[in-house]
Image (cartoon, rainbow, N blue to C red; front, side, top):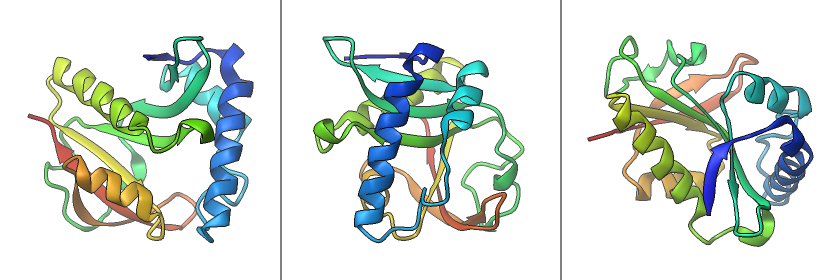
Amino acid sequence: MKIQLSTINEIPEIIEIIEDAKAYLASLKIEQWQNGYPNVTQVEHDILKGESYVMLNVENQVIATSMFTTKKEPTYKIIEGNWQINETKPYGVIHRMAIKKEFRKLGLATLLFNEFHQQLKIKNIQSLKIDTHEENLGMQALIKKIGYQYCGIIYTSYGAKRLAFEKVIQ
């Protein structure tokens, strides 16, 4: 397995994974990602900013995708609750993580998180923040299992309620 920055050429594979994830969430009656987001434009934007990552298997197939940045997330400024580390200090952010359907439940999301934790350690950044839909129990279980703490509620730029979590990176 290899994790690296995404390229424009990988957009079709990334979108296929995202579309499968949308269908999976819909099958669970979770409204997350059911409004046309994320889409090709968003993924292209992430790639051009150097914030889109893919995981490749040994055949160099894209089997997972995620957005990761150390730029501040505007919607995290206001939280109903409290971040563990003050929002004014540097932190990492994960959005748009999805695993190819044939590779779900194999621990690949944990590998992505570990990669991003390592990148933050190198930059001496002690916080990684993430938010998820309140009905996305799978993501909530995963992030709690790997040490994330529930911090409160944030609202997306389009007004959707999300549960906010943070891990202090040691």
